[in-house]
Image 1 (tube, helix red, strand yellow):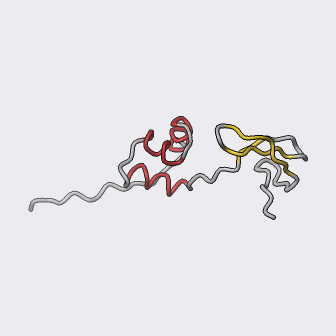
Image 2 (cartoon, rainbow, N blue to C red):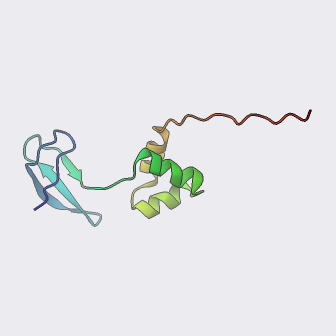
Image 3 (cartoon, rainbow, N blue to C red):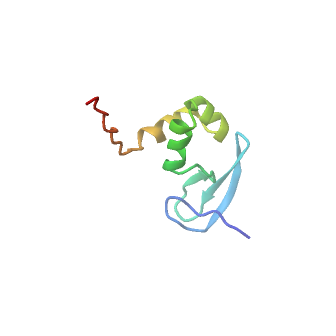
Length: 91
């Protein structure tokens, strides 16, 4: 049986703690932290959806079943290295 790990203290002593907005919630018996067991994409996957997939924040939020503010907050935290391509000179 797979137990959800607490994201705060990494303990496996967690119990189901009801359902909120159709998503199971859990509570850690060690530290009392309440959480949902969501699988959000990595920063790289999220950046690709936004930049290369040409999706709006609201489209990404609907696709991942999270709020638009979550997507905005996660995108704000992403720092990408970008190099400007060299300009071609007309010589």
